[in-house]
Image 1 (spheres, one colour):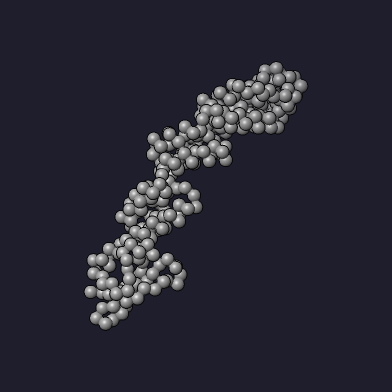
Image 2 (spheres, rainbow, N blue to C red):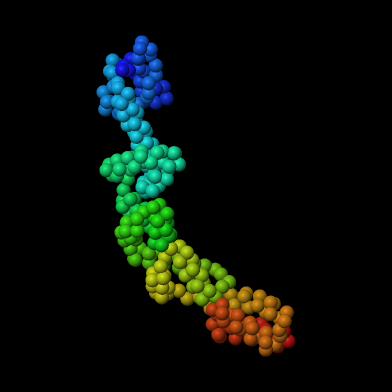
Amino acid sequence: MPEITKITTQKKSKYRYNIFLTENDQEYYGFSVNEDILIDYHLRKGMLLTPELIEQIQEQDSSYKVYTLSVKYLSFRMRSEQELIDYLEKKEVEDTYIDEVIDRLKKEKLLDDAAFSEALVRTRVQTSSKGPMLIKKELVDKGIQASLIEEALKHYTFDQQFEKVEKLALKKLNSSTKKSFKQQEDSLKQTLLQKGFTFDVISEVVNNLEVERDHDEEYNAIVFQGEKLVTKYQKKDSGFALKQKVKASLYRKGFAGDLINRFIEEHVNEEQ
């Protein structure tokens, strides 16, 4: 039966120990263990080890390596269970060890998908312009269960969404542009949908906005777009047909009828 003859500290890690054994008067390197395993099994010089005990110790040490690897990964930021599983699989860790470490970390509250989801939602609300649907997608991608996502998103209140959407809307609608106010509103709605906000909050904000386009800016926009349309259509049309085509296009772009008529009168001649 092998006997421990020497225990030395590894040069690269003061928390790992090399175990040397002797059998039939021959000393040889047996295996290495973490400090916690050394203590748990009371490993010491002169201790006799059965092959079964050596195997058990090595199994425990392998599991402990996975545990310390996981704790280090979790130390940088909170992770979902699926993120940790994906990380360990990339490290080619055996499934048995993954299951063991997941169970242990859950018991120690170092891995908690509910807490992770809530923290992620709160962080995104505080530091980003993302709406709830984008955050939901992010949580789905991280392997969070639907029930936990629904619960976490309760921390993103309608009032908070309204405030973010209103801020984005005012910034976009007050910016200088060559588009009609209607085009700006449509573009705003599309942008907000892409950011993950719902129709409910977008409609609520847009309906409550007290923003009016300056009349001169709106006319400058119609002149900018109208002249492009005239140049485009006069290649094939002129006179009444040209005016009708330009009018129809400007209506579709959301310009008001009085501004369209003014543009036609001032910028489209009968000879064109």
